Length: 379
Image (cartoon, rainbow, N blue to C red; front, side, top):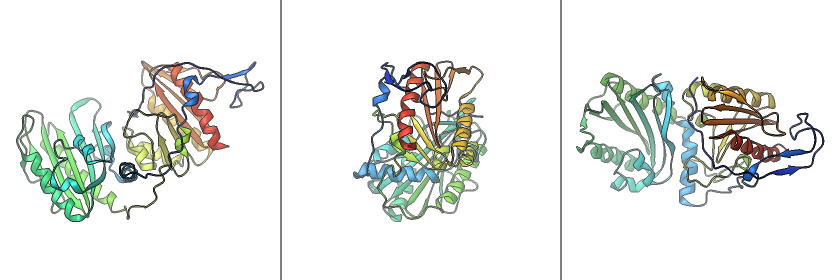
């Protein structure tokens, strides 16, 4: 099982939240003496309700997050693409698109860019393989078509790092533009096409031109099929309709993936084997995934929530992983330690909390705090 690459690191502080309860831990686990749930500073770091996306950037990000439910799975395009990488994120401003194709934000067509999403992957054992996919949404079809010419034209300009040339790429859809660079960095193929007001960009690199061409063509084909299921943009501006983000820890680190609620398919994007993750999410009946300073999920039932924790624990494990103690007076939390990484998971009814940190003590404090937040949702 490939490992998830999303493991946020948070600073270490220690405060104690005392809870005067009887002779059971707060989750019902038998214990002795007074209950003291150690949450550190995190007990006061609940994500507040976020309300509506009432600014242009927040509205673009919300639409981009919804688009994530219609992005390709790299591992489904080719098994070599088993290692999720950054950038995988919503694109809420034209400046954000610089992480996809540098030095293109000022192109005339990009003035009509509204939002997008990008997905990146590689191979866990071989850095010579790489993949990036992006979908840009423009104000109209004309702008998307113009962007194909302008963006491909920008990449065709020789630089220190690339010498792309237009080239036929077997399997590309009719009307798509393909370009190729066979320089010292490997065989790189990029492809552009449009579907209405959406531009689809695929980039693939490997030592084998045939592999890069095949991946570029498959990425385009699969993305077109996924976008056919996208209807008109919803006008619902609520960032978190069900309040799931209030079950997470606050974060103000500027991570573009944070302060967002993703759908089921989008949640699977953040795992190396996206298809396996989607199967596990489906089995758990998870329809929402909230990501901020920690992660929260809503499963269909308490039993299915426990099954999702099993998947998370397995996904974290490697040859160095060992079981770690649960937080004080929260015996139902499952904690693991692997080298310099620690993880803790908790179920609260049908909700699941998930935290990662560099120290076990901090992960324990965070999951203890998240338990108190999720309990408010359950109650």
